[in-house]
Every structure is written in C-alpha cells, then in structure tokens.
Image (tube, rainbow, N blue to C red):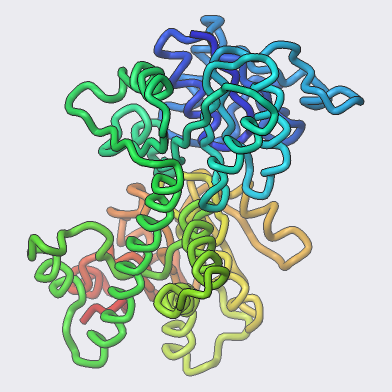
Length: 434
C-alpha cells in the first residue's frame, strides 16, 4: 500500500519506518527543521533503540522516501508540493499545528485519499473536526484517530510490539483498512481497542493523567516515609503486591518530564478548566511534580546547611528518561536552575542528551558537559543521580570515591542500596529511603 506521512515528530518517524518495514511504500514529507536537516546529512535525530538502523535500512531499500529536499510542503499558492495523495495519508504533526492538519486533510480529500489517519497530539475532538471539514467540502475520505501512545526510550518497540492499540473509528471500511495496516503488530493477541474518535483521544490523555497521579502520589508518600522513618521502597513493594493496584508507576523519584507525558497532563487539565469541570486533582499532581524536581537540591542544601555557593555538583543523567536524548520538561532542567541560582558549579554527564541540554542552556547559564561520568564527578561536592541509565547502576565505587572531593550521593531514582553505598564510605540520600 502507498502511504503519505506528514510531520517530523517521533511518532511520524516510528510509524513511517515501521510501515515501510512491513512492505508499504511510504513517502515521508518533512517540514524544514532539525529533523529534516539531519536526514539530509544521513543522520537520525531521535536517539531511540533500533530506530536509526530501521530508518536507514528502509531508505536504502527504497520503501521509505524522505522528502527533505523541498523548501516547504506547499507552493506559493498554499497547495502541497506533491500533486496527488497516496491512498492512505497520516498526520503526525507537532502540537499547535492544527491549521496545517486542516489544510492537508482538505488536500487529501480533494485528491481522493481512501483514509486519513490522525496521529497528532491535538485537543480532544480534533479528529471529528477534521472529518466535519471534509464532509462540508463534499469529500468522502474517512478520518480515524490512532493516538500516539509511544513510550520514549522504547518508542519503536512500543509501536511494533504494543500492549494495547487505541483506534478511534466510526467507519467500517476504515476499520478494515486500519486492521490490515496494523496486522503485523497485532498478531499474538488482538490488542486493538476500537472506539469513537473522541473516546480514543480522551482515553490517551486520561491514561497519562492516571500514570502521573500514581507517580505524584508515591512522591507524596515518600515525603511522609522520611518523616516516619520507613523505607518507601518497601512500601512500594507492599502497595504494588495488591492486585487492585499493581506495580507499574509506583516508583518515587525526582519528578517526571518529557514532551508527551507532561503535555498530555497539562492538556487534560486545560480541557477540564475549559469545560468548567474541577481540575483540582490534576493541578495538585502537576504542583507535586514541580516541587519534586527540586527535591535533590533541597537535600543538598540541608546537607551543607545552606553553604553551597561555589561548590561543585555533578549530575548523572539529564534526559527525562533512560533511552531518550530529550530533556523537555525533565527534572534536570529545574534542578540545574536551582543550582545556578545559588552559585553552584554544575557538571553533567548523560549518554545521549548532552547536545539537547547544551541547546537548552545556551544564554541561560554555564554548564560543563562531560563524555565520561567519572571525569564529570571529579572534585565534586555531591553527585546527583537524575536519570537511571543502566550505565549508572553499578559504578566503580572506589574510583568514584577517589574522584570526588566529598563522597556524597543524592539518588533521585532510588537505584542504589543505601546500606551498601554507605559501607563504601559515601553519605547517601535517596527519595523516602532510610
């Protein structure tokens, strides 16, 4: 099947490459920008396991045609540069680009596309709005919603081996086509849940809201655990053993971030406000999360009794989660700003996210970035573990202690055994740990 993909999001890249791998012929139309420039240079900007190899391989095989040579997607008259749409058109655009989505939907409808797939992160009701616009123009193209449920850090695996797939669809023929497109990823058991488009869009943001609530709840419990002298990790295991609750997203830490997760919760909160439904719970979730992003700084401040000016601090990890090079809304950013405000010399190591972090820090403050984690820790008065990359789980404690000026560990993800680290000669602080 021939497919046109529009957008430069991670969702667009994963979907285009995966469909191409399944034998479809995909034209991927990118707007000018960093993603397009990287592809022109033979690089893949999104650092996701297996994704660069897949994109490169499908381009080499000729099934993925990346149209990055256009100055834009439209000619001076506003019409798309490609004259005729493929039978299937996918939109995985950036948030806030709904006008572009309407323009492309109209073009797909005029061109006789048999299906329009909306994967963009737009407000609830956007797919219905696209469908309404097409019907008003007399176009018969059905519009379905395939919400972006990718987990950054494992984006390709979460698309090709999904635990669940949401499909917003109210057209039988469109559902048949979608089931065929998704068949390679829906073989072990039927994980496709079909519902109305508005229901699919709402389900996606409601999932994010629920997961964020669990995380913030456990962070609140971690504060109480410290006051009661109990270990939140023991509490987590006890709570997770209850089958009504389960184990996922119960880890206390230094806050969540990411371009998708945080945005979903904020969009859900805004929707509740606009509909004049109380959003107090989710507002509290977001407030707790913002507070939690500074928890390591507060522990550092208390340890040194406020005498932190000109001290040197090392952060291990800047990406909002392991496996990603993204720092968007991540706890490292808020933490670095708090350290800067107190005159702290900040050094950072991260396996993937240093270029993104450098771009964020430009014109904000001074960061020293390191390619080696032990070089980053040299002469430091504290080491703050922010992102739980696997490379950080088993450090050489002797080398680390010898490198640091003061052997102080602030574990923002509770990945270390407090008793063991203490026996290695370090002072240890976790989140809700004894």
